[in-house]
Length: 596
Image 1 (tube, one colour):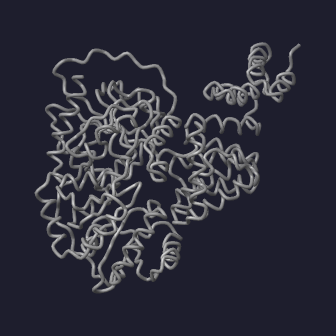
Image 2 (image 1 turned 180 degrees about the vertical axis):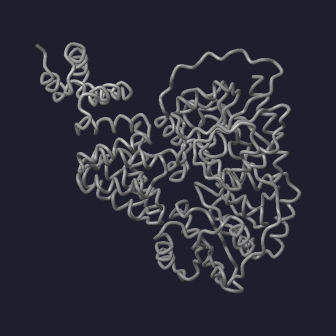
Image 3 (image 1 turned 180 degrees about the horizontal axis):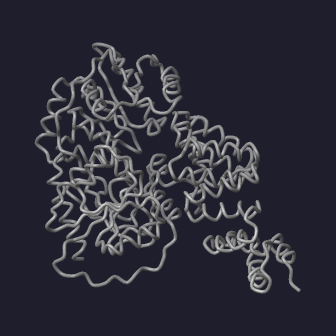
């Protein structure tokens, strides 16, 4: 008679499918805890997490405290993204087996997805201590440390991972990106070369978002996105759309709260024509409350709370609501869920605003303008390009609070202030070298930067010394509430943009406050948003054509006493901060997509 031992031997030999088939016969003939347990484990290994969970629950009905069953059940729930249940299951498993690294790892994964980063870090710390040579645990801890704004610590884990398993997926890119957070440029060129080699060899060796910041190569950006795209599922059959119905548009995001994307979008949502458009917000981010989330809820007719739903469930809910257009505002950014589009949420799927790159699959349309995706650049996009008059929306202009004094923010009196409030991860060695050239050419100037992650300021000051610039000429701004952050812009003379990932919302913030932005557009969308904004206000003299031109313009423009007044007037004349006008152009694009 066949036994669970034979099935286990098959499993140990790597024949999981055969072991599962044997276990299915065993539980039909003579169900036992062992057979149910092994059936659950093999199904989980074969990618059938839901079937695995059913088998494990059947085993637990016979023995509710068996450690292996409790552990495997945790892993199955985590694989199914049933995170609240997974956390409860992990606690139960650890109560009977308190030193179980896979369970701690699964617990960390579920806590991380639920936003409990500190608790997740404590869990993965247990796993690393118990199994210090397991690469997956080091990699997860590095990711968590990055989310907790501790990239220097994340880099140390990734350096250790290089010793354990130099072939670990995305290792070179993750280390390069972690170091970029603190402007630690050791081995930067070598790591960059490894990342590009991975992509050229057809390996998804870098997260798509990081790729946009690491190099200005749209062909590689598309390859990276295509390699990273979630698998497709069969396309549903869409019913005929009733003529004359309002167009149903759903905005999908985790950032529908006090966030840069929400600040850009809020006025447009409020300006949508309710007689022609029915607006849905599909929020899979946190319920934060607060003024911005309340404003967004008031601006949308329907608010779908989707954080606890799977990608497939969210797509199904969108289809049940009859969406004509699903607009993904996240793409491959943190907490983005491109798998929703893979499950087909609407007949027309659009990528816009939150992610300045192609998804490589599943989106039909990208919204851009003639600057961010110039004619001839369409080959780098898997989506069809629909161009608006300008790409980035903005809330309406409003009075700002008074600015702080220079002394309050650490700026010297009388100095010319070059400024960049971009995340320091966008500052490449090349950009910083150019900035130091500008500072050497303008001796009575300072460079005012966003402080960013711990360690970034110290590393940048050390690089300034190497470049022959006194470190005290770099002044760092700490995080501040948004109204105070906007107000302090008034103290800057000229914003210096970064490349290949330039200023987007940060450029709009500066222009809103009448501060000029000098930009150097490259080939990629991410490098061209500053140029798009400046084109929208008819200030092409702030768009450099080369690195040498960027330096020359910076020195001339910062000394121009009339420039800020000209920028403020150009902003007032333009429609850049007119959400009603933007909504009208957006609605015209949506209507054309539905007709098509």
